[in-house]
Length: 243
Image (cartoon, rainbow, N blue to C red; front, side, top):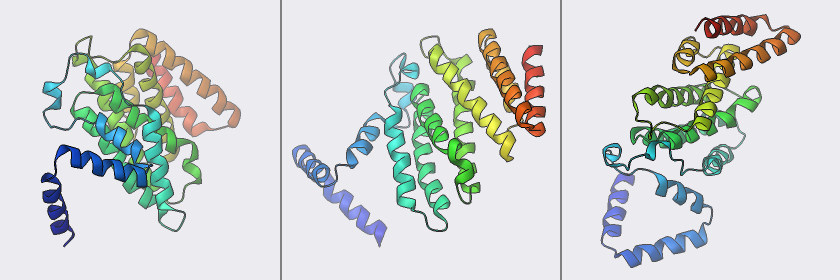
């Protein structure tokens, strides 16, 4: 029944003129001003499956999507889920839809925008992960963030210089992946292949930067007495310094 109603609504909308549709949209925005953020996001999305072939040169490194737009969708996901039992599963369902936005950008070769989506979702979950009930549902979302960010990184060598991420975005990409790797080590998420991938994809300067990050984390964990994570950090450090 719902599908039939959707078809009827779509058919009705198709019969409207451009001016009528714009007027309808204006009325919706007046009654539901919170929808403006979603509309801005939808306007940035590539709308066709052939978008990568059609995109303009250099679009892969251009960021047109602001993290605040994704943060609003994340806040809405948690707000709508509430705090009753099972809310993590409800929130995760909506967060997967946010990740779908990143996947759309990935398919279109808009790497900078895709990175914004995946990194912003991960940044929202990681700091409060321990406080969340039934965090296994959100572990799946983090795996999606990890896979998306790895896709952005692994695509770079095959791109022309004008399509590759800017240096600052590359550094942010490595930082996001390092944070997810560390979190995976601490919470049992599968991340064993990440150090090798990061080491292989990194430039000399990026490897040196990651060496600094690992040594800083090792120092902190030695003070805290965390031998489990420290073992992973030591292996990562050995891999980086051997390159």
